[in-house]
Amino acid sequence: MTSQVCARCDKPTSAPVVVAIGHGASGGGGTVYACPGTCADSFPRQRDPFDHSTLPTRDTAVRRTP
Image 1 (cartoon, rainbow, N blue to C red):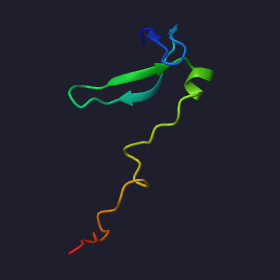
Image 2 (image 1 turned 120 degrees about the horizontal axis):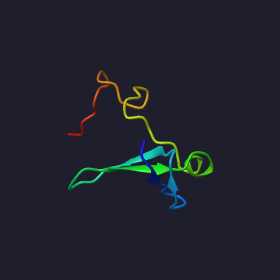
Image 3 (image 1 turned 90 degrees about the vertical axis):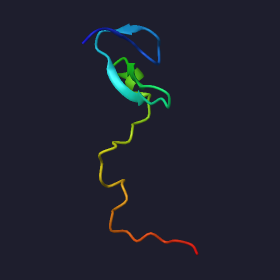
Image 4 (image 1 turned 135 degrees about the vertical axis):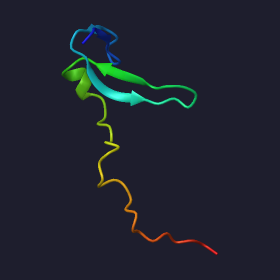
């Protein structure tokens, strides 16, 4: 992997760790990198979009207000 700039300490790192994926409304997002160790551990853990335990089930009844 190529060298990336750490989002926490702003120094280049040759072993970057992906800590977040930035999303944009008008265009593509960007990947946020950090140094392994202290910098990467200081970022909050991102939710896995494919984790089925956090998604609502399709069989759940939807309550509608009249």
